[in-house]
Image 1 (cartoon, rainbow, N blue to C red):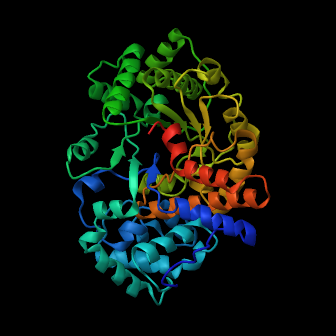
Image 2 (image 1 turned 90 degrees about the vertical axis):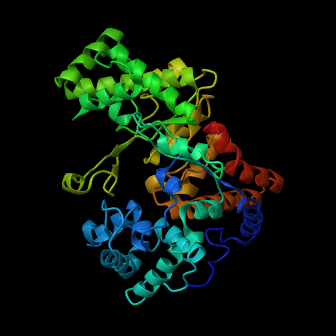
Image 3 (image 1 turned 135 degrees about the horizontal axis):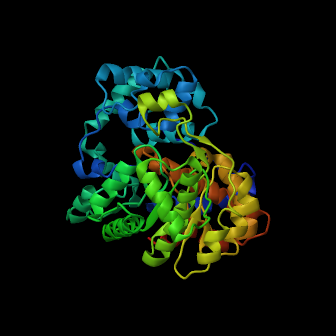
Length: 467
């Protein structure tokens, strides 16, 4: 690999559009990173310990990487998935597996940000391959021993201004409290309220709800106490800096139940006798309740629906969740959200950000909803869609109906700490390329494109996520 990456990567091939895109990108390249949705563990920054090894840092915690390697026949055990810091021998095996299968990442966004991590963070100039694996491993391991490569130093180097984490409602948020109290820490690391497991009855649900009640010091043996406990924990998160609540379920149905019916299903769920249909009805009702609470307390409501979690049950049982086999489903927003938007779509201060893994709904549903309701924002492409061509398709699909101002700004949605700057850089280059094309087609003046490019990085995420 070259000692530096090509300056025009991801910019338009057409010369006039590329020239404009270069100027736009120069204006946004070094702006601070706002990361309003992600999964980095805040204890990483509290402890500020050296990273253990290259494989634990760059491979085993990034399910984008491990899922493709698994598809190529590399067992997840060999990659250290779910095992934490790895012994050196195992870390080297995982690293050799990744380098030996480097061709599997051609044409994927993983190739883009992994290459950026290797070259721009660690100064690697050799292309990963079986023959170069050990040399690259040794070079990165040597840098990880340097204090300049400890978590806090890299955080500052990456230019991160705001980093949101994803947290269980029963979490005491001690790590966030420690960062906020540290006089040497100046960035904002914000918790995000993620109540999924408490909204839909299932296995161990009664125990989870009991833990929620203990955290809130509220009796959750009845429905009213359960609602008050959720409201209390939301206030706890707000007191620790939270600006949003995040929800991910198979669908975004929001049909209301009567208070009596909600209380009846809640009692049955605690006993373990609620049917599957009753559990789904209760969860849809509770999404509506979450919107009501957001109108009351101001937390932004983000929806990440339509994923079949843990598609391969043997892998889930052995390695746990978030190990690369969550698979997208078809999505429907227009009718599913109508009860919610009928009640709260024009409520002052309510923000609802809609993300999807189903590209077909960008033009048909999300853009029209964001183009009418003042509460609704079109969420940036995430997960399987945070890829160059998908991001380009998103801009074309959404802009004609909702414009730029009704979009959320980029979210990196990652546990892979070192990939954050590369992911945001990818988004900035692609947006500048799209704006450059509009200027080259004489559909936008360059000063307007420049203002928009800056807004997409700074104004939009601040506004949509109330940062």
